[in-house]
Length: 238
Image (cartoon, rainbow, N blue to C red; front, side, top):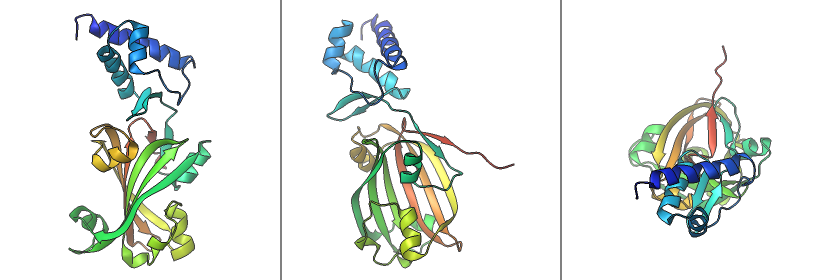
């Protein structure tokens, strides 16, 4: 990168940020191709890419493989203390949710899942993998692990619906206590492929270990969010 390239990166980033903040580049709109942007700013594609990567790190733009760069929409408010589920949470904020089932099967439980669900060695679990969108944008890849003892024939059901609503209607189970663990992460192969981003892209992993109304461990979820998709909050009652 040339000596003046850092200044060019900063200038391009500020120019695009100004356009975004004034609504000239609206949320979810697609940016011109990097080649077009390099012609517009009279610089190289490498310099344009660096400016876009810096804006992406700040959550102002995002990239999808083979589709290009887009203006980031507002983040979803994710309240840890509120009992809700993805479709209800998204809809309540005036957005449109959708869910795609990637796979669903009975399989041996990993050591981590055995620990979360307090299962003995060589136990089987039901794994359901889903990709979830807000306003057609892929934002979440989630792996659900269910104790088969509590969910007979669940693999025969439409699993694109809310499991939170399915559990009481079909099995008489409701969530009780929930334990959360959150950690920034680099998206691994499965999550990156589902979200159509590069392996190693920044993300937020939220692990949820769920008990039912009787205090039994019934399932756990591993949520992999795009880093710019949500704003997590919690208000603890005094």
